[in-house]
Image (cartoon, rainbow, N blue to C red; front, side):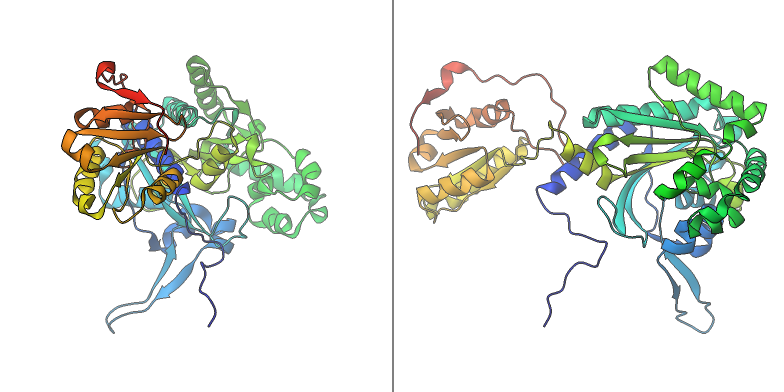
Length: 459
């Protein structure tokens, strides 16, 4: 019998790597909360029509990469329905905005999500068929200021803050405007005309796109096609005054906030719903496929899905790409050992050890619990692999209330009053990431030095 394995393009995330994922998500939640975003959770599958309308039938996502199936009717009165695992989340968020009448409040809706997406593309480094995204959307009626260039700049400034707080330095913000639908139509006509004499030299995908959606030609990554693409018209020449003014206000706000950017005339993004501002953050540590995240404005998407006029802007962050970037940085800490290993010296002390571990865990510490059947040497060996310190609990310690703690990095063994133990371990900098992520450092915790005795006793 063959061994079952994860399906191609999927993978298991295991400790300690999952701790890094939790840290990223916790940081994102913290940053989003400061910008007054609330979380939305949409279904992982939707009616296929949602993506055909919203993302665009001629995009690679819809035409090649979606996981779609016919949902069988359970009764004669029911009709079959075409369903699709979500390949992206913006369309689902806008569908929820329409379905639940969120625009009726007259207020901006600032929503974020964290969850899996699915695309049947060729698996490669940092790209999987099931992948996780962190994203956010700002959407609402025009009367709430949803069209304002300030919304674009605020989103971009928030993303710069997120990357900085994750410790990702050296990123580049690529910025462009794809204009209004009328601007895009003019530009598509200019592209079609420019492609006629050169398209035969390009890859089969570009030849198809030149007929169905010329804007997608700019997304081509085939090296041989790049010199041809460099000769094509740029969309900036097709923008009307309103689109130019909008983009100028976005860049002025970024300049005022001190967020650096570079204008990238080829950045049009791969989805049909984008209008005006489009953007992408890249990082050199990811190699040729260097995109960390991207997004843009989608002023007509709500109407495309049958809803009211509700301009919006949003983005999606590929968590796999963030993890790879953090792992590539020299300052990334991958050591996720427990703060301490509680080692009972004998099975009769197991219950007391559990009670001690409970106290320490409730103080916010990551604690590993040993077993009293272990010999002392085995407890030390197990503790050294899983924790930074060992707390020895014998009959003497239980009776006296003075615990023995050894720090593996310094080799120093210390006698600590039980009442001071949690503070002592916290002072060592070993606080647990609370549920959802790492705690924010606060004021230093101080243990009265007269009550702690250090010595050089080793195992």
